[in-house]
Image 1 (tube, rainbow, N blue to C red):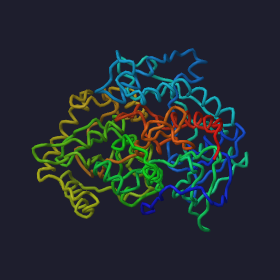
Image 2 (image 1 turned 180 degrees about the vertical axis):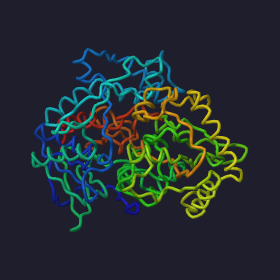
Image 3 (image 1 turned 90 degrees about the vertical axis):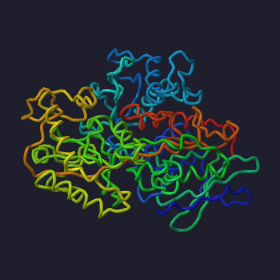
Image 4 (image 1 turned 180 degrees about the horizontal axis):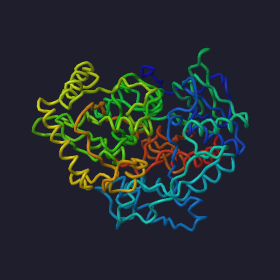
Length: 547
C-alpha cells in the first residue's frame, strides 16, 4: 500500500459527521471485533472501520492459540496457577537481564508490571465474557509453555486455549475470525472495509472525538461520542519505519499487508511518545516467499523433519533447529566483531530425500513442499557440493533481496563436516552442541516421531550418505511489531505527561507490548489482545465525557 501518509489532528469545529456512534473501532480483526462485541453488549453504538479489502488481518492466518493464565479449564480441573508464579514467569521471560524476584515490580518498569498484573487478574473474566457472547473455546491441556522446563515454572501446561468449531474440530485463525465476524453481523454492528483512517479529529479541549476516513467514494468523518479505539496492528509493512526502528534486522514479516503503522504515525502527530519500537514478535521467514509478498505466508514456527539441519553462510550449525521461533530468530542476529558482519542473518535448512518424503507440507509455516505446493523456494543438488553451488547461485540471483550475501568459499567443505558431526549426534541420541530434542515444546512442535526413527532422540536422524539434498533460505522477520504508544490497563493511550489522552484507546499491536525481548509462549498475542479488548471496551463505554 506504499506507506500512506497520515494527517495532523483536525479540529472538530464545523465538521460534518457522516458516521455518528458512541465507539469508533479502527481495525476489523481480532482486537477490533472483540472490542466491538463487548462495547455493543454494554449498550454502546459501534462502527468498525477496516483499511483492507477484507476483514481478519494477521489473525486470519494464525494458529490461534491463546495464552490464558488461570483459565476456567484449569480451575475446573483443579490445576493451580498462582498469580505470583505467573507474574514471575512473565517478567523472567520479558526481561531476563533485569528480572529481580525481590523487586516489587520484578525488575520491570511499573507500567509493564501493571499490564502483566492486569492480564492475570482479568484474562479468565474476559474469556468467559467472550464465550458468553457466543465464541466457542477449548483447552489443549497438554500444550507446554515454551520454557516449561525452567525451574521457575509451576504451571507448565494448561494455559493454552484454542477456538472450537461447531463440528467438534479445533479452529484456527481463519475459522475464529469467521466466527467473530458472524457474531458481529448478528448484532448488526456496521463493518466498513476499504476504509482507511488517515487522522484524528479533536475538540477544543484536545479530546479525540472522531477520525478522518479515506473510502472508495471519497473522504468521510466518523464521530466517536465516547471514544476512538485503534486496533490497527503494528508497522511490519512500513519499510521506512522498519528501517528506522528495527535497523535492518528483519527483512519483512508475515503480518497482514495493511499493517503499516498508521496509528503509530497518528500518535506522533499528537505528540504521543512511542516506546519499545525496536522490539518485535520474531520468526524466521522463507526469504523468497517474503520477497514475493505472499499474503498467506506464515513464519517458520516449526522446523520439519529429523534428517534436517540448519547452517549459516559458513556451513556451520549455530542454532537448535527445534527451538521456539523467537529464540531461533535471535540467534540469526548475532554479530561477528572480527569480520564486522552478521554471519547467521541468512540461514539454510538442509535436508535429504527421506525428509522430503516423510515430512512434506506447510504445517506451522514449514518449508518442505508437498507434491501439490509451490517449490520455487527450494534448491537441490545430487551432492552437498552441488547443493552449495545451487544455493550460492540463488543468492546471486536474489541480490539485494538477500542483502547481497554469499556463501563462504569453504561452505561446501564445512557443510560436509557439519553433517558428519550432526549424524554422529543423531546416532548417539544427544545433540552435544545445541541440545536439540530435550524440551517439551520442541517435541510438541516436531510432532510424531517417524516410524523408521529408532534412534534415542526421535527429533534427529542421520542425513543420507547420498543425495539428492535440498535447501532453502531463511531470513529474520516479524509476526508483527511490539512498539507503539503506551496504554494503561484500561487501554487508554498515555500522552507525554503519562496521563490518558481523552477519548483515545488502543488494543493489540497498535500499542506497545510489555513483553520486552521475549516471546512468552504460544498465544501471547491472542491472549492479551482478547483480555485488553474487554477492559478497553468497558472503560470506553463508561467514559462519562463525550465529544
